[in-house]
Image 1 (tube, rainbow, N blue to C red):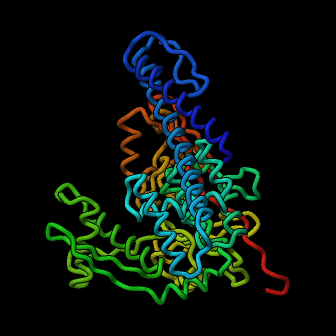
Image 2: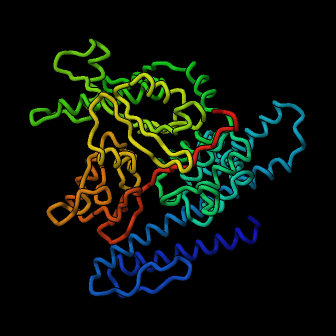
Image 3: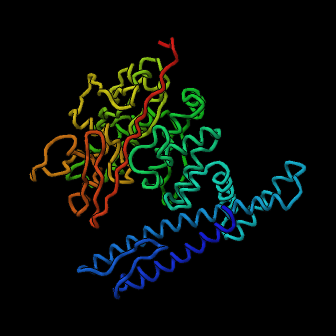
Length: 463
């Protein structure tokens, strides 16, 4: 950004803040008079109509959205100033003659930024590193941040997920999510309409599938680091965590969840989370105790056809986790693992072909298709994956709704209750797309879609 452009941006944002203060807080939110359109802040609210409380609510929601865009633009300015100061710091000093001198100068710059922002030096160092990444290697991300289309949290996710990638690979990841004209651009709602946690999951999944280093190689390397960790905490509690292959972790989680659900009932006061950890602790300490069931839960494993037959290296997808190495998927399918349900995908489109059936119990085909279509609860930003969710009619059966995939969703229990107890409602599902959600204010929020894409075809003679 040139100096004149920076000043124009600052002036426009100052005018927008003033407009919001006058129009939202001084007008509708205080219940006084009418408000007009602001050229700088965008349309906040029109004249008060027949329902001033509704107008007030709409104005405040519009104001929140506008402030969010301003925060993103301010973050872009912060990036510009941080990168500019770092560059000026280098220009004002003679070239470092030793690694120690270079490190000392970086420490000096970091300390200055930390002091001027009143943050820790660790936070300042992170800001400087992210600013350098955004200004030198992620132009689409910085542009989206400056326009207010993504938040600072989204920009940080992009910095994290492109870390360690070659420039071409980083540019491809960035383009997939931020350039609608890119080949096989991300489907569904734009990156800025995903909560940062869900955006991270999608970006990480895409990175895993397209990483220049084969996933089998990375998986073998990471396997060497598997471990169990223990960390004391307050109030007589502690954390126990395991770093282990994804299929094993998913299987443990699924079986503990199903066992916990089997214990739920009118006389059980423990929550699902409490039951899950109690079951796992019982299994670890004493084996499967009497009265604690150990059902074989069913976890979807989506496997490209070419990967299954060993003719391709496209990663498979493990429900609730993301991409896994093809060798892991072939082992799960070949061993007949009863906790995993195989799904094959078309190499030409990445779309599902069929749901495999083995000797273990298979839920109704429609329920399985919902799990495959949605992947998780379709409420915007929710990460509860398909194993934890409930099939539900969008238009109630009693109101004429049919039992077809286009009239079904699989919200988690929290958002299932939200649908039945409040005016929030899902709408517009199709065979291949989850429903969007309509809020009590009438706003429409898109659901995240599965990011299917064609598999790379193997080289000639591979078959």
